Length: 132
Image 1 (cartoon, rainbow, N blue to C red):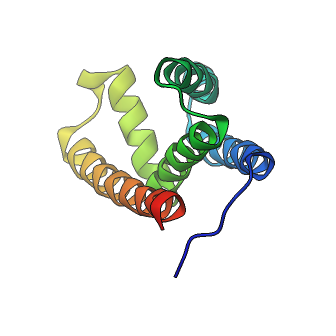
Image 2 (cartoon, one colour):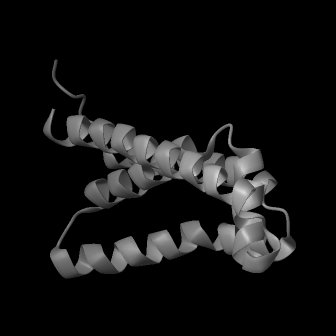
């Protein structure tokens, strides 16, 4: 089965959609306004980073937008359904000594596994779309 050709204007729509979905999934999980502000900056940093990288390596916007969308999808798949674990992880990051290890260890393990699987699935989709 061959991958469909997706034009750059459709990639723009996909990138905007994945950004909105990323913010819709991640922002409600953050317990503090500081954490929410940090999460809200991730798409901006991603766009700046990929634009600079694209200029240095000579990639076109289609490739850059597909990479951006893939990372966004990986981050979304990696945390869906893990609100309680995310709250523990954020609390542990802000106050490492105040979070019991009995809670933080299993929560971090579940997040790590789900994020890893999310990125594998997202990369497999990206690879099929690019080399299908």
